[in-house]
Length: 173
Image (cartoon, rainbow, N blue to C red; front, top):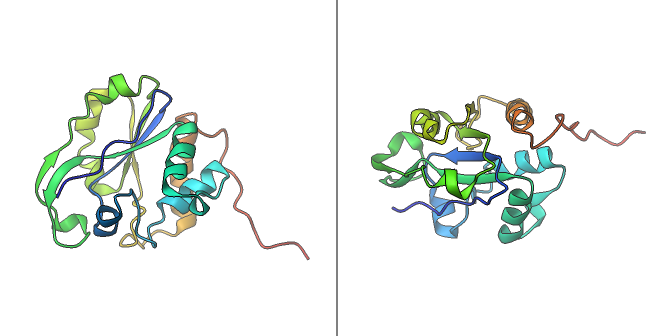
């Protein structure tokens, strides 16, 4: 299986690195396509715009406009299903071209433990790396609110947001 291409621009300040796209993402040709993956809802909450209502192309455009990029640590692998634990014969992506493609890059966020195992590879970019809790539906031990707070801190450090936006609550009576 072959990974998806990087989604970065000259304005990318924070690069989110996953491990490898899941089966739903590979079928759709879209990052985080599984309907239960919390990536797009968390990103929407942090950026203050419901990206889930947009087409995939517009999601990527809005994400890039805000300085967030995406890619994976693995270029290819063998895997049945979507679990990181089942990844075999993985070939890592060469991250070095990202320094040229994303000159404003100031941080890397590894989405989950498997991606973070390769933090030494992202160190070639010369920016701080951060371990983010996985947005995968398989990582259910953290609530979405707890994940959002952890992701929000990295977004703040990278200059994507100034403060963690409040979570919309129920309407007042």
